[in-house]
Image (cartoon, rainbow, N blue to C red):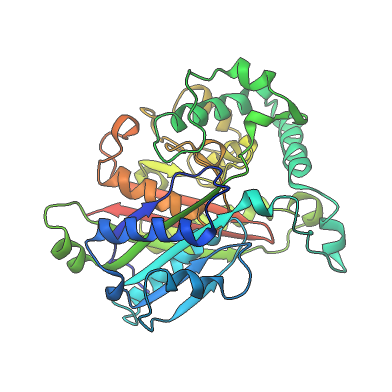
Length: 385
């Protein structure tokens, strides 16, 4: 199915952070109304809603929609771990592309500060019993150590990615982490060690937030906001993992490397876009080692060349392919449900050329990528019309 007639009508999000006095529904309401205002629409115009959250409990999606009004629209709860927000976006895009819903809302929210430490890890027999022994921090540390052994990667490479993203966060009003000084590689390396070589500054924070996107036709986008650039959906792909040799040890948390590579290749094929056409990319970087790996797996450099791409400054704002311009998960934050929709927010702002100090010059095509524990991968491509 073609997405060529599907456009992002509006986006909105809260600043990610810690909100002890706000409920998930409060956060959802704020992000949703911001997106509706950006689209120049009312909630009564929305024909279908896809609501993403990890920890809200049964029927929270419907209750969130009641914050906007009782209009009878169909509501679907989406949950795919860290990939939840982008999957909501994919489902909304499919609803519009199919003709089923002229206007669809994709909204995500979570309060990770309340969920952290309170939810037991899912268990089970078979390989689940093996996977659950490995906590994410330990897994990504092992992934980093393996790359260091095989490729000669240094802790300084991971620190450089983290520093870049912290500094991008300082340019982003919606970012959780907004340092008041320029973060250095040395500062990242000196932070508390979580699991060698990962330090606390190389990981995402525990935070809360919400984000929303409204989708409709390209014609409607032009009608609602004449003169504003239209951001069109070019691809929205979702895959789960496939078996590879050594699978249990190579991909128990986010799937084997082939999952991201295969999902990205399907998105490029679906859209007719080549990695060389992408102007700005947002990827899963809950831990700094991930971004380094995804430079290669998303097709932006050859295998083994990620460190060179990084050191040459090509993934910084002003470089050939800026990554995580809003600070990524490391700085912008990663509340779970809304993370992917925060990526859509950033790409939309970038492609409209409204990103201010972090604007990528001439940005026309953007990529969003997330993986979800379990394991799934989703890649979306957006393009300015």
